[in-house]
Length: 217
Image (cartoon, rainbow, N blue to C red):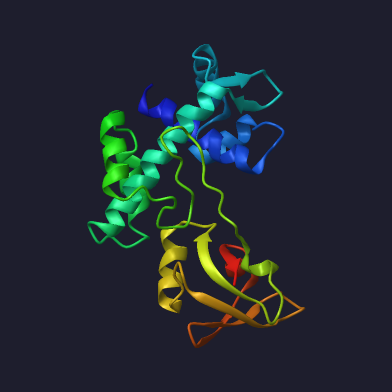
């Protein structure tokens, strides 16, 4: 596959996580920042390779072959992110763009050795699950911080928004994977939260709370 084909497969894979009824060409075009007509042309190519199921006006879904290929791209991306953070001391807001380049390396042997070298991690630096060599995803028990009620406490296990801006914001607030977050109160007006993070008191907006995953403690 070409780099472009791999990028399309990964985009469709991520979109299928939030859509169970097929992914529209417009949704793919928005993610890929291109025209719908260009998406249609690519989908036809992917369909010829038995990577997607595509019928005009009926949405797109990955075939079993396409889903496995997409998971292997995601696997490479997330393993490289772990490597960059743990072994090269990159911060979690720096690694996405670099991993976007490294995920296109073709050597399966290299990736499997990288996996073993890192101790077979199950999550990337943002808390997202890493598919194993067979494409199986570990299940991570998590819910959005915004779903917690006053008095509940959770451990930060991931982020929904992986943009550099959001991650830098979390760094400023002292929020990271493993942070203990206690809900002290919730405003009915705007659903903002008063929280305690590792003994620090903070006010966070509903937008922030809906982009943080926690595991109840």
